[in-house]
Amino acid sequence: MTLRIGDTAPNFTIDTTQGSIKFHDWAKGSWVFFFSHPADYTPVCTTEMGRTAQLAPEFEKRNVKPLGLSTDTVEAHKGWINDVNDTQNTVLEFPIVADKDLEVAQLYDMIHPNESATATVRSVFIIDPNQKIRLIMTYPMTVGRNFNEIIRVIDALQTTDRDEVACPADWMPGDSVIIRPTVSDEDAKEKFPQGWKTIRPYLRLTDIK
Image (cartoon, rainbow, N blue to C red; front, side, top):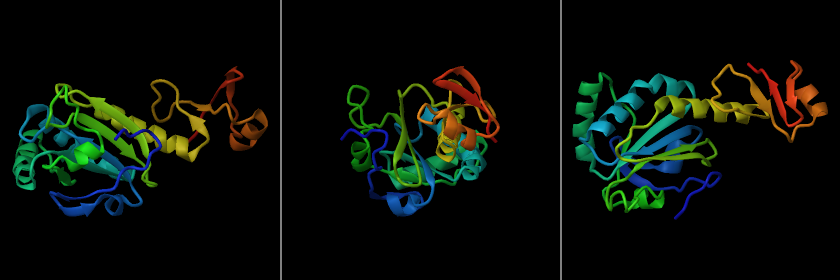
């Protein structure tokens, strides 16, 4: 199954470190950072799980629920969480899916056979409160994710949902945004009374709070 941006995130019911969850019910009303890792008790994964735990206040501020996944068992996850907390100086509180039968990994196309036949690659899905997939990223097993980018893209998605704008390259919160080409100058006067700078007719920059 190939998932694309705009698709509804597939639902599933599965065991996690915090009990059984039905994904759509668990996620309801929140954004979700859903990410897979190859295996418990591995070095890159330990740093990533720790970083996710460290960023808990940032995710909460944005109404985002992190959800991890690997093909290990709940028991293995719980033991490994102790290592994550100890080595990364944090307290991991978000659930980790135990996908030992590869059910969710196959549903979300997280198994890339030329990388591994059984372990998931480092997939990232950002899912909005309407349970639509808004972003998909895939990292190889040997490269840890850039969590600054994950936070940045959540900020960008929430900004573009709130205002009829787009975000330019390397955009960060507080930077100018682009008025979408579908918004006429007449409509822009009402939507963006603060004004804008026209670089080209199709490239208009404005500042928003």
